[in-house]
Every structure is written in structure tokens, then in C-alpha cells.
Image 1 (cartoon, helix red, strand yellow):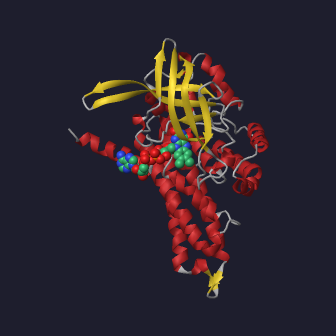
Image 2 (cartoon, rainbow, N blue to C red):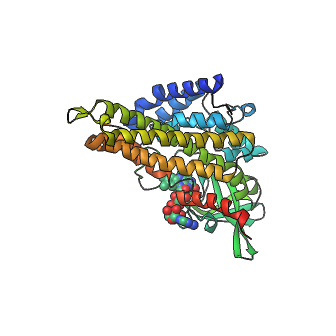
Image 3 (cartoon, protein in one colour):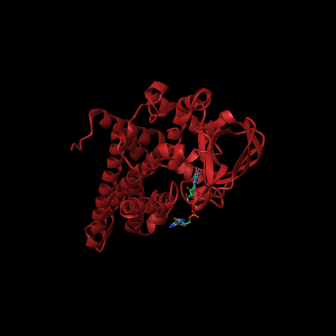
Length: 386
Ligand SMILES: Cc1cc2nc3c(=O)[nH]c(=O)nc-3n(C[C@H](O)[C@H](O)[C@H](O)COP(=O)(O)OP(=O)(O)OC[C@H]3O[C@@H](n4cnc5c(N)ncnc54)[C@H](O)[C@@H]3O)c2cc1C
């Protein structure tokens, strides 16, 4: 067992950290205040990320990406997690699911996404179908070589900036012993085509400047060549590629928690009450100790899951445990950081309240904490059940 980073991994961490400090952090306050990332700033970050070799770092080298393995991606995400989500998102890591592109889809979607010419959003959730995705009502009805799409998706991140959507729609139903079950197909749908409307969603407390939208499909006609993966096998494509996405959420939580702990420690070491620095009070010092311990534990879980992914032995519970523990740890760490800052922690002048607000969504998106617990508990119980 070797826990040491290789020279290459250490260089990656240094490069990303320097990029975050120089190219992203200076714009955090602007993004918070304006609740947007200016298009020129997005373009600037993309160009500088490309120059630094960080753009599409998760994609295979032979396709023009950075060729990072899962461990490399986790380390990169950890560092990017230190800054505002809206800013680091401009350093695109195209969705892994795009690797399922084939034929002309590679030229139209995958390669432009890697080159930074086109950006995707991922549309699964609906007003009536969140955790229970299979109950989705958006339908794709076959008409010869075409499909007619009807339905509404909501909470779709980055759809305001994206050029196309990776859409999941019910394309058929099958009877099973437990009743009828929807079959889902995944499609690549270009923004701007007739019958596809994008509307801004309500403002969220987490991640200012990173918006979510409602996607409305009304008799939207697309060709069958827009199917991503196989017809009726959309969840297979999602399961194959999206588990690792939970790992990126978890890795980012580590970076954010580390930043919170640094800020909390600096404050506790300098703020004086009752004639001494507050960190010297056991009630504060022990908080710091618990925070550091939890961050270290979460980091080990994340890196272990990434390592297993690289070895080809990662299972869904590995990603679920990493996401569950890291997101819940971040909530505790940011809450305690705010407590250590006292009233100052609530003021918008400092990044503390933002870290605390931003932490809230992590336990909800990409599968809630309860859904992660389902994944873990089912895997535990299955071998013992008849
Ligand atoms: C800011 C933001 C951005 C998002 N971006 C995207 C995106 O880009 N693309 C996309 O497709 N989706 C996106 N989502 C959707 C996100 O993945 C869902 O919000 C999430 O899966 C939960 O669904 P829900 O909000 O409908 O909650 P629900 O599924 O209605 O759940 C409500 C509560 O019930 C609990 N619950 C539900 N079922 C069970 C169960 N079986 N056992 C125990 N508890 C249960 C949940 O854990 C939760 O606490 C985004 C959400 C937000 C808030």
C-alpha cells in the first residue's frame, strides 16, 4: 500500500492550485454579487485552462483531452473545489457519458466538447421525477426514423450556457412481475431546434452564478441518429458513466472543506476573547480537531474509490459512500467554521457564509444522501436475501 503521490500527481495538484489561486479566486466576490459569470470571463477561463492543459483533463488523450485517470481527476476536482463552483465549472470536464458517442456524434458533440467549442448539460430530473427517475413523464415517441419529444425537465444546471442537452426520456414500457416499467432512452438534443425551449429556473441559495433551467419539449422532432448509446438502454449508459460523477462531487467537497478549515484555523488562532485566542478554548480547539479528522477520513474514502475505479474494481457503493460521507462532512465543517467566526461568519464580506450555503446542495444533487444510503444498504443486504 503506497499513499504517496507520484511526481506527476504532485505537479498536477500544484498546477491546479496555482490556477485556482490566480485565475479563479480573484473573481469570487464579483460572481457572488452579480450572480453570474460574465461571458468574457468564461471565455478567458476556458482559454487559460486550455493553455495550462487543464481543459477536458478527464477525457482521453487520443481524443485531445488531458488523459487523467480517476485518481488524477479526483485530485484535480479537490483543488477546483476550493473556489466558487460557477468559476471552476468554466474549466470544463465534459460529462463522461459523452464517451458513449459513436459515428458522426463524435465529430458533432464529443470532440467539440473536448476542444471547448460546445458545452453540454445533462437533463434527467423532472418536477414529478427526482430520486425516482424512472417515473419520468417526458416521452420520446418513435415515428419512423424520428422521435417526437414531449415533456418538461427542471433543475437542469448550466442549460443557459450549454449548446446541447443529454436528454433522458421514456421511450417504451415493458410489463414486469412488479408491474409496468418504463424504458428510457438517452438523446443528444441541440439547443435552438424547434420545440425545445429553455427557461431560467428559480434562484438557488447554493452556487451563485451557476444557474439551473427548465427545459420544455413540445412536439420536438429529432432523428434517431441523436440516440446516445442504445435505444431503450439510457440508464445503462448513465450507470456506466455517471457513477464516477458522484466521485467528482465528493472530491470537490474535500477541497471546499479544507479551505473552510484553513479559514477557521486562522480565525481561531488570532481572534481574542477573555484575554486569549479563541482556539485555545477547548470548545473551539476540539471543533478544529474534529473537522480535520473528518476531512482526512473523507479524503481517504474518495481517493480509495478513485483508485478502485482505476483498478477496475469500483462498485456503486464505493461512489455512494464517498459522496455520502464527503457531502455530509462538508455540511458539518462549514457549519462549525461559521460558528467559530461568530457573527462575522454570517457577513457577506467573508467567504464563510458562501461556503456554508454552497455546501447545502451537495447532499441533494447527484442523488440525495438517502439515495446513497439505499445504494449502500441494498448492496449489504442483497447477498443475505432470498
Ligand atoms: C441546484 C440544482 C441543480 C441540479 N442540476 C441537475 C442537472 O443538471 N440535471 C439533472 O438531471 N438534475 C439536476 N438536479 C436535480 C437533482 O439531482 C435532484 O434534485 C435530486 O436527485 C433529488 O430529487 P428531488 O429534488 O426531486 O427530490 P425528491 O426525489 O422529491 O426527494 C425529496 C426527499 O425525499 C427523499 N427520498 C426520495 N425517495 C426516497 C427513498 N426511496 N427513500 C428515502 N428517502 C427518499 C429524498 O432523499 C429527499 O430528502 C439539480 C438539483 C438542484 C437543486
